[in-house]
Amino acid sequence: MTRQASPSSPLPFPSLLAKNTRLRAEGSRETGRATKRAIVNFLAERAGSAYCAACISAQLFNGKDIDVPMRHLEGAGLNRRHQRCSSCQRVKLVASLPAPN
Image (cartoon, rainbow, N blue to C red):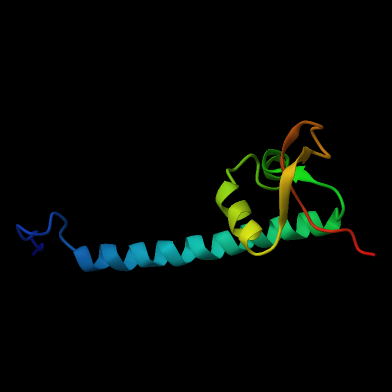
């Protein structure tokens, strides 16, 4: 016996859909943390140099869009400014971590 969708619910099992949506959201949160961690590690290894999001993305994430994680990191203290990228040599919005003394 199959369950029929109610008139108010277009899908037969809306509670399962909600649960899967919640799981996807938690998974994407973990992915976001991993992305931010990878960006910080990349910049820490190259402290004192500045890289644009496109170059960081090309080296770490195969060109994936990282604008949102970069904005979150900027809010957490990552330095971002318009300057020449150490990789592509274009004047762009770049990110860096301070060089150790």
